[in-house]
Image (cartoon, rainbow, N blue to C red; front, side, top):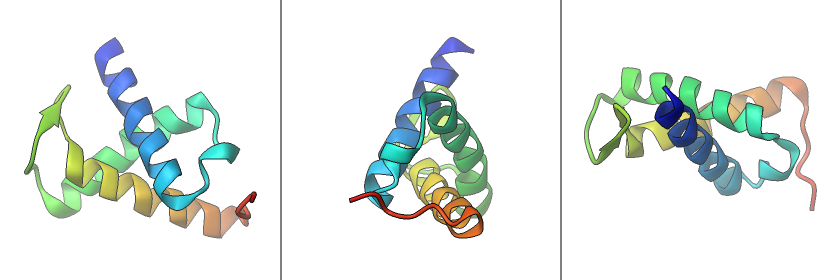
Length: 81
């Protein structure tokens, strides 16, 4: 369980870095984005590529990026540059 939270946090942080919205997300948001994005990505794209803690990394990162973009669009989170 701890391993899943750590991998979820890493996936969420990578998604935040890709979308340039990582500064506005805290650790709990990174974990949630990683875990929920992993479920979304694996549901849409399947389980292919390397896996950690039962999460296929590439579909998980893609799903987390989609989730971060959708949540940012809904809540109006702007890019903080």
